[in-house]
Structures are given as C-alpha cells and as structure tokens.
Amino acid sequence: MRLLLISDTHVPQRARALPDQVWREVGQADVVVHAGDWVAPQLLDELEARAARVLGVWGNNDGPELRQRLPEVACDVLGGVRLGVVHETGPSTGREARMRARWPDLDVLVFGHSHIPWDTEAEGLRLLNPGSPTDRRRQPHCTYMTATVLGGALADLQLHRLPRDG
Image (tube, rainbow, N blue to C red; front, side, top):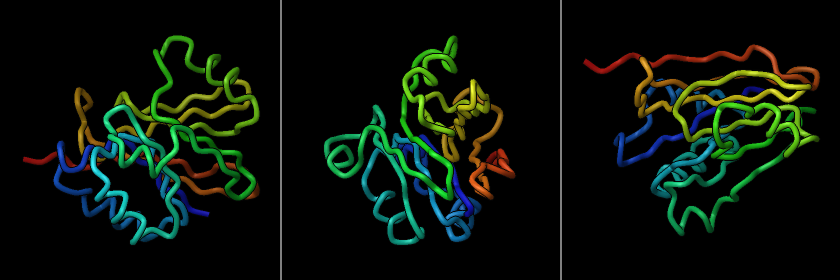
C-alpha cells in the first residue's frame, strides 16, 4: 500500500494549486493523508475526485465548510498500521511523550501546522510531519512524504523536496 503524506497546502491562499509532482504522487497513492490547513474546500473536492482514497483532517486555518466535512482527528488501520492524523501537536519540546500518552494505540501519527518536516519515534509511535508542498515558510524547500505499508509496518519513508521557484 502506497501512502502520500501532505499538509498545510493553503490552496488558494499560498499557492494556486498543488505542484504537478504532487499530483503525480496522488495518482500513484492508495491513500492520500492530509494533515489539515486546506484553507478552501476546492482542493478537498479535487483530491477526492482524483485520489483512490483521502484520509484528512481540518486545521486551524480551515473554515466551517471544511470542518463540517472533515474530522479534527482521523484514525484508521492501513495495511495493519494503526495510523492517526491531526493538525496540531503543540510545542516540539516533549512532543513524543505527549503524543504517545494521548494516542497509546497508534503506530504512526501524521501531523502538520509547523510546515517543518519531522520524523521521530517514541516508544513505538512514529511521528511524521510532511512539511508543506506549497508554503515552505522558513524551510529551504517545500516538502511532502511518501511511504509504503508492507507486512503491517511502515516502510520506505521518503521526504521529497520540491524545486524552488526562480
């Protein structure tokens, strides 16, 4: 099972659309995981039309329409991996312990909000932030992640850097 992990797309405020490279990944993914801050429902509509499956949550910049359509927290078992999605996890200091205590039954937690890529593990919980494919903020590149679920485990996790616009 192939996963595409994205967050903080902020379409159409920070970008008019997802980069073409990300849309190609959408076509190859079995599940697109979006950790919030869509900003407008049009991207959700487009992803739902083009992706095999979307597992997403709303973020702090998402208004009433997105909050009606998406949960604040989403959890599912994907290929034997217990995966959760949330937008905000609070400060980076102590994040691993707080998230392990909050979600003792998860294997992977995908989150967003900071636009900063993150990959750590704490007591069997993998914490992943794919960054943003459209708004790099203070990061050197816009980013997203892909992974494969094999034999009930997350494998082949990759952080992809998108080329900077001239």
